[in-house]
Length: 193
Ligand code: SF4
Ligand code: SF4
Image: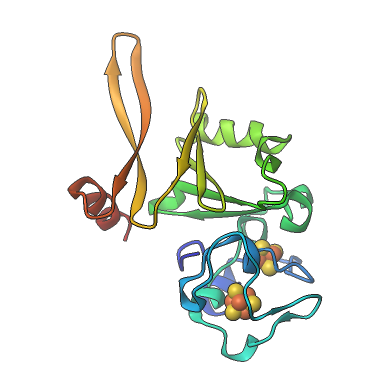
C-alpha cells in the first residue's frame, strides 16, 4: 500500500465518492502490503479485529489513513467492485493514475479472471494505456492490451517495468522484472514521485 494508492483521513478522504463508506470491509488490511505495520500482502494485519475493524484505529499509521481503494474513489465502479464482493482491492497510483495494482485474495486467486473484471482490466490496458498489475500475495501477473503475462514471484527488491519493442507489425509490450537498484528502475521510480 502506498500513500498514492491512497483507508483514511485528510486529502484522501476528499476523494471518496459521496455515499460510499468502508462499512465492515477491511479487505485492504488483508490483501495489501503495509510496511508501517510490517505486514506482508495476503494475510490479515495483526491489529485487525474480525468484525470490529482496526484495533489501533486512533493511532493507525499514515499509510493506512491515506489509503482508499478504487471502489471508494471512482464513481464509475459499481458495487460489484466492492472488495468484500469482488475479493480484490484495486488501487490506482502513479503519475496521472496511469498504473493500477489489483490485490487479489489468495483464497480466491482467480477472482481477477472473472467477469466483469477481466474485460475491464483489458479495456483499461488497451484504451486508456494503463499498466495493470495483478498481485496474488507476491505472485504477479500483468494484463496487457492483447494478453495476460504470468510474472511469477516478485522479490522484495524487484519491480516490473513494461518495455516497448518496435516490431515490423507495430509496438509490442514486454514486461520485465528488474532489481530496484537497476538504473532503469531508479529512473522509473523517480518519475513516479
Ligand atoms: S478495501 Fe476499500 S472499502 Fe474495504 S476497507 Fe479498504 S478502502 Fe475501505
Ligand atoms: S493498522 Fe489498522 S488500518 Fe492499518 S492495516 Fe492494520 S488493521 Fe488495517
